[in-house]
Image (cartoon, rainbow, N blue to C red):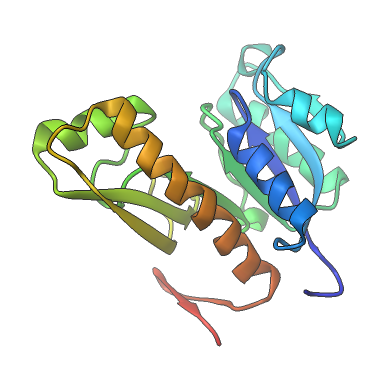
Amino acid sequence: MATNPLRIAVLISGGGTTLKNLLDRVNAGTLDVDIRLVIASALGVKGLRYADEANIPAEVVERKAFDSTDAFSRQIFDLCNQAEVDVVVMAGFLKRVSIPDDYTHRVTNIHPALIPAFCGKGYYGHHVHQAVLEYGAKVSGCTVHYADNEYDHGPVILQKTVPVLDDDTPDTLADRVFQTECEAYPEALQLIAEGRIEIVGRKVRVRP
């Protein structure tokens, strides 16, 4: 493990399952990150309880409190700067943000499908899995990528696949994909923590 853990902020909008997974990996000694800040998009977001239990500073930044996406985003990234984070981890954050230039390749996201398929505006949560089933795809999975200012567009860090079964429902497929997400996101963040990521254009190369 690295001497200096990767300092991250985690952005959430719901139950915080991804945040809990990251905390569990940190506590198990398999993920070398320091969660410096949790930002929720609304009061009462259930995932905030995990931050509270772990004594992690948490802030609520609501989109409705700001006149524009840019102003909303500035508040989020100002908080991240104050916490001196290296990387901002989108963990089911459902509000659009404008990523400033100094956070290029410093914001990660996970999408519950294999980008560039079944991604973009409107493709989130069960909408993704319903679309996969309606299309008749035989495999699905998840994608960890760097976020930019287009939906599901930034360079892909890693992907994991799952089979799509004949009797799948959106719920059963979502459950199977989520199991891969629980492996993929910590794996990607650990690669970043170890300094093994090299970005060349749109391609992410993993150094030994």
